[in-house]
Every structure is written in structure tokens, then in C-alpha cells.
Image (cartoon, one colour):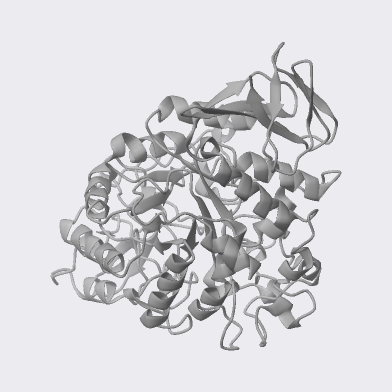
Amino acid sequence: MQSALKANSKPDLAIDRDWWRGAVIYQIYPRSYQDSNGDGIGDLKGIIGRLPYIAALGADAIWISPFFKSPMKDFGYDVSDYCDVDPMFGTLADFDALTAEAHRLGLKVMIDEVLSHTADNHPWFKESRSSRTNPKADWYVWADARPDGTPPNNWLSIFGGSAWQWDTSRQQYYLHNFLAEQPDLNFHNHDVQDALLDVTRFWLERGVDGFRLDTINFYFHSQGLENNPPLPPEERNDQTAPAVNPYNYQDHLYDKSRPENLGFLERFRALLDEYPATAAVGEVGDSQRGLEVVAAYTAGGKRVHMCYSFDFLAPEKISAAKVRSVLESFGKVASDGWSCWAFSNHDVMRPASRWAANEADPTAYLKVISALLMSLRGSVCIYQGEELGLGEADLRFEDLQDPYGIRFWPEFKGRDGCRTPMVWDGSAKNGGFSSAKPWLPVPAKHLAQAVNVQQGDETSLLEHYRRFLSFRRAHPALAKGDITFIESEGDTVAFTRRAGNEQIVCVFNLGARPAEVDLGNRSLQPLPGHGFSGQTSSGAIKLGGYGAWFGRID
């Protein structure tokens, strides 16, 4: 009853076209959230039953990873029917029921649109590959072999090897930026664009509030098919692909992040603007120009509403200096743009293992970095289980499902470790996720972090998230305000958030040792309700290890 009351106390955002700005979006990986029919795989009905939990957490919206019909070679990111639900997840009626219940609880619904590519058994691709003269012959990216029979150029796939696959029917190569079973659509063909906009309209008519656009900067390729130049070793990083992947050896000038994409995004935005209070967030995977791409895609209010890049999703540990550098860089290149920040998702190692494992107090560390995330200028994505502090699952090779991990094992173990089932009940079979053997194992160590174990314990990470999201909701400056950084040293981050007449000072210590930030000879008034215990003295803020302080300057 308490959860329901919390959920229903949220304001009705149905007519707020700006709801997305500063929204907290909770990502659901449907295979792993809740199984309702005992087949070991999560489904839409399972999600419906858990929506009150998400509403009580304090999220504004949910983002559901793909649930469309699919051969599941890449677990739903290979779509064979954009306008239907895969039977393993339920039916369109189940989706409609999910949307209705989410809206009743005050939650917006965003779905994952995978527009850059389809499954190779999609009817469009079957027709396209059948000949060089059929009506959809140019719907995918086809190219002749070079005179020696090798692929048209040196472009590489994210999943390893050449981005070109030979097709015996057409005796041509087709482009696949991901698996060979995921052929890339040809966005230079306006019929393709029209078809994808029709798909978007289909879901808008069903009442969705927005979209997460998968691999948004991969839509267009250079029609000249130029070779990508090599990237000097000192400029390589593993933000987009793991370090063991030669994909990082190229400067990806011609296979993605093309300027032609801007025109399509404007068409996409014009469609969304026909429906009140809809929004889109794009995933930008570009290790060299990520922030610049985000700036271009969100500029002027005529493309997508917001994007997220991989700046805080890479293995490199978050630091005070990096937070300031990324936020200030974004403010310079995208002064009128909006970003969505995340520390975690279904593709990267969980931060509890990636960053917190070697900290003196991992839980306290996760509390302070999550408070920092939820205080930055931008919207926020939280990935299921992040609020429980779940660590990366250490799976055996024989338990792997992810083709990425199977390809690069053991140096890169793939994405299954962050996709294991959600744990609801520490004493129940499979953590309360399913009565059957789950599609991925439930780690025994996760059971001690289950929802029912943490719920009601004010010292737990789960209750910290609930408390801080309530604090954030009470102060609009934290959601929609401007940000100005304050000089600080070492592991401390300090800034103000300002909206209207409200200005909040936010100070964080990302280190284990006590720290102090001097704000000068000012009168400081602390704000209650966030759960941290930083102290003030003569204009200085004193923080314990992994501490924070929030207040006003009189």
C-alpha cells in the first residue's frame, strides 16, 4: 500500500511536453526482469507486475529494451517484425496493458527502436537479397567485390571481423556493422526512411511516450565507400568496443556519424512533434567525436530531444576531473543541447564491479556516485539492478549466450554478466525471477542484495535511491537547472544548479579520505532529505569519505 501511495503522489505529466528534460529513466531488459509464465525468460506481463516497484523507486519513465519479433541472434536487437511482440515476451495486448498500467502509475513508456539494421530473416531483407532488380533491392547496403574478390573496403564490424558479408544470391557483399545476421538498412533510400517512420507512427498511435534510438549514429554510411584511415595507437580507447577488438584501430569517418543523418533526424522529430509529450534519446557510439555528435543531434530543438554518449560507460573509472571535463565540454559544444547520463546499461560491466570493487566501502561509494549522477545537468538512465548495487556476474563459458562474449572470450567475456536476472526475493528460487531454470544463471551472491533484503533498511543502497530521487523531485533545479562548477581539488566535485529563484550547491567527495571544499566567507544553509551528513564551518564544507553536501548560499 505504501508503494502505491508513493507512486500515485507523483504529478500528472501527461500534458508536459518538457517532461523528458531532467527525467529519470529506468531501463528494463525484458528477458531478465520478471518471468510470469515459468519458461525462464522475462516477459511483458512480468514487467506489469513490477511497475509499482519502479514507480515507488521514483523514476519518471521506463525504457524497455527490444521485445519485437526476432530470431534472437542478438537478443532482440535483430528485429524481424517491427510492429509485433515476440511470443516469448507476450502479445500486443500485453504491451497495451503495460502502457495503460504505467500511465496509471505516472510512468512514461519509452521503447527501444532498432532502426539501423534488421534481422536477416526480415521480409524486407529476404526480398532485397533475392535479386538486384526487385522493389527492395536498394533497401540495404549492397556493394560489389573488389577485383580480387575481397570486401569493398576495410570497414569493420563491432562484433569482430569485416563489416561485409558475401551473399550468394546477389553475388554481392552486404554491410553489417554488427552481426552478419544484422544487415544494415540503406538510409540513403527515402523509401526506407518512410517505412521506418511508419513503424514509429505505429507505436506512437499505441500510446508510447518516446523512444530510445539504438546506434543512432550508425544510420548512414558514406556512399563513396572510402576506407577508414588508421587511428594512431595513442588515440585509441575502449569506449565503444572492448580493447581486444581491432575495431578501435580505425578512425570511423566513413561508416558512421555521417552528416546526412541530420536530415533524417529532422524528419523523425517532425513526426514526434505531431504527438504531445513524446521524446527520443539517441545512443551515440563514437569514441573520437561522441560529444560533438551529441551536440549536432540535439541542436536547435529540431532533431532528437537528447542523446547519451559513452563517456561514463567506459572502463575508465569516473573521477572528479573527468566529471567536470565532460560536463564543461558538453556545455561548450552543445550549449542548446541536452544529454542523458548513465553509468550502466545492458552492454557494459556493472559499476559495482567496474569501479566500486576496490573501494574501501563499496556501498558508500555507489551511494555518492549515484547521487552525483542524479545531480548532473541532464536526464538520467538507471539500469535495472543498479539501484541494488548488483555486481557483474562471473559466468562460465558454457553458460554464455552473448555472441560478442563467445567471439572474444576470455579476454572479453561479453555482456551476459550485466544481463543476469533481477533478484526480488533472497530466499526464493532463482531470486524470485522465475520458477524455471533462467536463461542466464542467478548468481548466489546477488541473493543477499535482493529487493526484499534491502527494502525498509534505511542504510541500504535501494533506500538511498528512493530517498535521493524523492529529494531530487522536491528541487526542480536538480532536474532542469543550469550548472556552474566551483573550484575544488582532489576527489571533490562541486557545482551549483540553478533554475528560476532556486540555486542549490552540490558538493561530493569521491574518495575514501575526508575532504574539504572552501566556498569562501559565506553563510551556508544545508538542505535536508538526501541522506548525506556533510558539515559546514566558516564557509567551508567538510566531507567524510564518500560524503556529500547539498544546500544554499545565503
